Length: 385
Image (tube, rainbow, N blue to C red; front, top):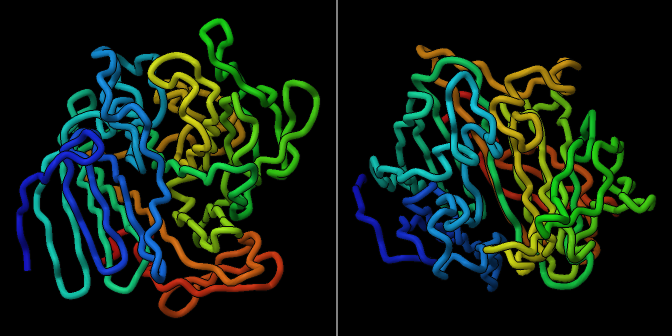
């Protein structure tokens, strides 16, 4: 069965399409294609794990880019980052047209146990087309995203920009990832005190564990526990192990007894960025109230700098670590991504491993507890149904 549904009512200040299954309800904004709010049904509970910016229904400065006015959930960036510098005459907006422009609905489908929303966007700064598929499946607490890039030529740095809102007490969430080969704090100044922005981590510091990351004051920060460091804004990058069949990022909430996790193909989304946002921006519209939020962003990019810095020579690609995808006009490229949630048993403290199993994945904790989550891991493959 197929249908083409009109936009529904405004949700958190934005005209949005609604997509729902028995276990997941998701809204997708017309402007920027932001996926959020999203509600997962876990047993008798309904959980909304993603952040929605506190100003989305306020009157804001008309000079703000659309992405900031809409800011919520997860959105697709092409090119990822600030894009302050032009690249060969191209001047992209912050996180690209895909995160700012108006998307067009192609169709909304329900086929058997699958619900799909298909949107499209023809980009202008770098001409091409992006087709966005958002898919839900009956019996699965998972949200599937696919962005099909066609007609593009040359380097581009894509990324997903998922933002989680953590329960408001220290260390409510425990963060872990699949193995990474390099970890580093953003090398330059991330926030400027002269402009009322503050950071706590040491610029450029390398690390091998999330639990020991150098701070400006000479101490070590534990990035595996959050919320922490109220009043500061920080950014770090992890380079995923490219030899993994899939890479993952997970946040366990032991007290609340649930886990959120994301899965990707590290050949197409090579790095993970942590944007740690805990009230460190005192300027509008942030005004110190964007707190307990962490962006867990899967990218192929040189930090959040933009296309010019990612396509040019930088310290990562000098080591052979890709920071762009090189696209060809006659070739389609898919950026596939899965986000999911599950209840967890008592004593499940932190995700230590995520392994493929028949019909889904198994999450294993450091204490030996495990939980199976049904989902279609094959979604991550190029050309998969």
